Length: 485
Figure 1 (spheres, helix red, strand yellow):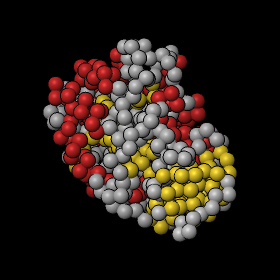
Figure 2 (tube, helix red, strand yellow; figure 1 turned 180 degrees about the vertical axis):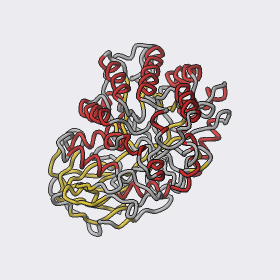
Figure 3 (cartoon, rainbow, N blue to C red; figure 1 turned 120 degrees about the vertical axis):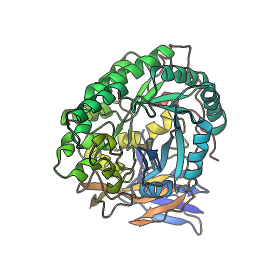
Figure 4 (spheres, rainbow, N blue to C red; figure 1 turned 90 degrees about the vertical axis):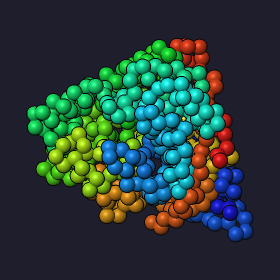
């Protein structure tokens, strides 16, 4: 099957230029002006529109078993919803229970993910430690194409990684050429603050941000960065939500340490007033960790994105419907943590980033696809419009408008944190693996069409222990990517 996208402005992280894009057999075969479509090729008229790499969301949780329930979004519905917003690839998380073999958990998640409509990959969490974890990390890197390992510094008595676990896991990651990622919240502080608030009778959603103040994230971010510095392994901090954590990232990068930061679209645009709503369901719908913050943190996060100290945008897409959130009606600590966003990330970032002058179209591509592809070692297969790259493309209409609503979104959740937000700039067409999967409001997702994407280990970015003072940008970590299964 062949496809010609004609008449658009091709935008990558490096440049914009007028060009046509020809795709065949799932790959981009030619980029240039005046390309001719062979007989039978599908043609998309992209006049007046941008042609960009499909979005890569590096942080999602489809079908996640968590807090006594399971996230409502399946790998099929979630990746299909992503298509509607211009997102073509996700990197999800395998999260073993403490004591569960990493390979057993990985096989379970691979089974669930077979229904995905779009391409996907996995980070794997380290939630406990023994020699089997050491061995399984090696198998995952060498045989399964996993090059990133997650550490939850929160959720005491569940999946929290202690300092000892982090030390062992960071060392092993360095040996294997893998990057470590961290959910930076001090789990002991959160646990104690939650107990104190409940004892004082503060049981509603307003207790959630009170139990996770900014300093809790700042301390954990600093600790994770210092751990990585001592051991000499690159570290990626997920869902950075505070100026405190951003300051720790920025300071480390100024000193030459290889530290990367991710910010969620929601944390850029929503503040903590949502938790004080008299509507319990509305407030509970926003319960996620880290929580939404005071407005001054949002201003700092935008500056971090503009300066390059934050390199990627994500969603932490983890859907729990109102009925599931109600599990914590009498105790905020039992409200399942998670919100949606995989369908809306691109539109809200274009609206509040590009349309406001905070980001250029090239920077938009960098923070929605290219940097994630580089940091997690699937560039230039993903994250660019170039000959030989996967034909994962979004045709972006900068004049298209809509109002975001749970009534019209494709995500499998009855709530939307961006409810009522007008956006300008939308995907008119989304192409996945060379096939048009979204066209002018029509979703054409196919269950099981998504491919598992292996991400090879890194090589030269890992120097002698504790001496990673070389290039500090995502561009420096790019390596040729292995083929998908």
